[in-house]
Length: 215
Image (cartoon, rainbow, N blue to C red; front, side, top):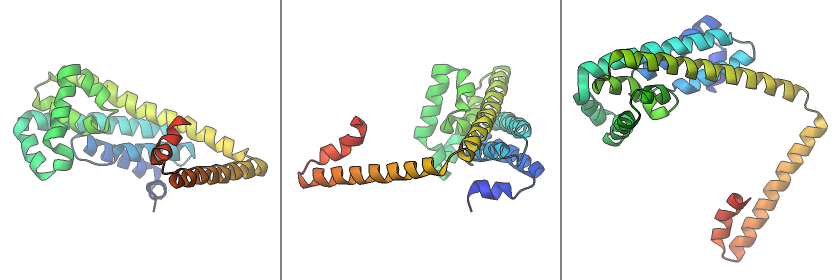
């Protein structure tokens, strides 16, 4: 079952709570698909399954609280915490990931917390890493609150209006337009296959690879 279908089967109140929980756990350092859950919930709000306001509020709360808990964990555990996590979960907390996260913090300072909300790697590391690097909590809190609200509410609003626009467009899409789109897709596929076959016959593998980029 697709995640959107699974979420649609959950009552609206529990759905919002789940959004907050998953995003909160991801923000404190547990690698979970927080952004996927938020996107799916926002698209469901465009279908009237759940209120977009509550999706944005719960996602913001989860992001802010989760990052704050992650900050406290990182401040208490320090860098040795990441060394232990790196040995157990090298895919998410390996030395390269931590080094890249520290680079962002040393280069951008408190902005790394704000911008990190929009970057998959930093969304997991931002809170714990800010604590381990002893960033002043008040600076972290301001960036955390602003980043969480902008990311959660902005994503929800954008996908809500985009989903509604797409729904109206599909309802007004005529069968003639659909037929034209299908024929265009078939024609494009046939042309690309002929071009690839011709290039292979001539031994021009580079042309096959470069072709779509040139277009």
